[in-house]
Image 1 (cartoon, helix red, strand yellow):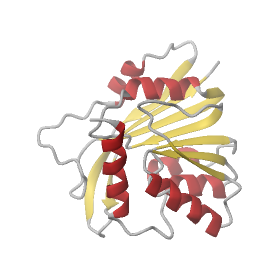
Image 2 (spheres, helix red, strand yellow; image 1 turned 60 degrees about the vertical axis):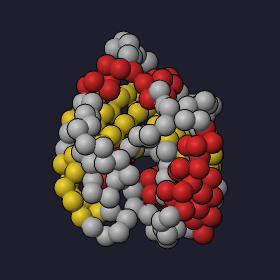
Image 3 (cartoon, one colour; image 1 turned 180 degrees about the vertical axis):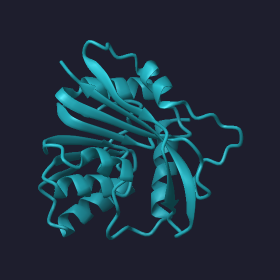
Length: 208
């Protein structure tokens, strides 16, 4: 499947949903980000922008990236309407072919799953290398499929956070795994339904 297919698919996913007026941040980000000194953040696969807006409100300068022009267009307009246009920069990019330049104090990758070609290990390795010393990479993956998920493939196996970390292959002298667990929570879908889901949470800090 090529980039055009991926753009069409994700534009369709976002266009099928009403534009969010006040998207909420992911709970694993609020757990991790509360109390951190604001700096430069990179939000990979920003979606409706709840994470980017939450970080911006805390004083972070956020680069929000998504393959969908619908998603980044909505987020740019939303950031301006909330008075955060100077703190949120939106970028439409396909991480399969390019990675945003720059150095960051926090990189977030929430539910970076796709039915299209994406070498996640390479993307996450690039994210880790984009961290400044002391910076953190937060990777949150699905550990289960919610009823409203686009991906309902039966029998799918979700790699553990430790397996994801091993796949990235970072030198322990430079990066430290600070968290690798699989907490559960009650999630609310786009249509208001709720369900218990499992998150696979990986938090890596660059130490040198």
